[in-house]
Every structure is written in structure tokens, then in C-alpha cells.
Length: 149
Image (tube, rainbow, N blue to C red; front, side):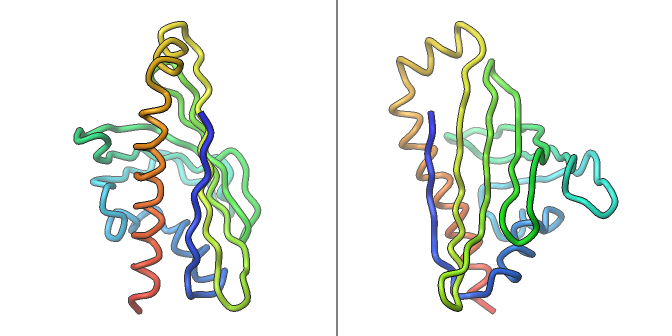
């Protein structure tokens, strides 16, 4: 499954970038994140930054461990998580649009086990719609947080 969602935020790239890398405080403005625990915080780089995120997904609490596998400051960061027989890759990117910023989240799921592959084929279309809504809601939460001050 692949999806990509974006919002335009009436703030410059640097402000949006600082908000999306503010892992310690993002649960204060992204409604679905209940708790975020930092596991590994490298000095002077985002590469290898690792955290455990607990959020409400499909009406239930779910925790996933994620880490940053690639980034370019003020452009994007990419994360990886492995769970339920799948690999999850997400990318949060910022792009200037005049004085505003386009914030995009791309999400890819790669099923690794037979059960995950069967689930993906049978129910993937339903999960994709729900994931698109959840990702969009996160981006809107970031937008509302930034534009409220």
C-alpha cells in the first residue's frame, strides 16, 4: 500500500520543520498521539533517532517503535517501523509554496509474511482509506497548531 497526503500551512519552512521534529512535544498538538517515548537520541543528527509512539488507531491503542533512516534538514525525514509482518516507511517533507509551506506525508507498507500479504490483498483497500484519513488528520493537527500562533 502506498499513499501520500498534504496540507498547505501559512508558515515558513523553518517553522514547519521545527514543529515536525519536535518529538518531545508533538503529543500536545497531534490528537491521536497519546504518548511518545524517546529510545535513542543521537547528538547533532536526526539519523538513528528512535522512539516508541502510542496512538489511537482504528479505535484502539497501538504502540510502534520507529526510527529515522534518512533526512535532509528543512526538506524531509524518513522513518521505518516493523510490525505485524510488515515494514512501514513514512516520509514527512516540507516544500516552499511562496511564503507558505506544503507539508506532505507519504506512507508505504511492504508485507513480509504470508499472513500480512493475504491481509493486504483482502483488506488493503479498506485500510488505505482509513490510513489516508488518519494521516490527513495528523497533518491538519500540525497545521492548526502552527497557524494558531
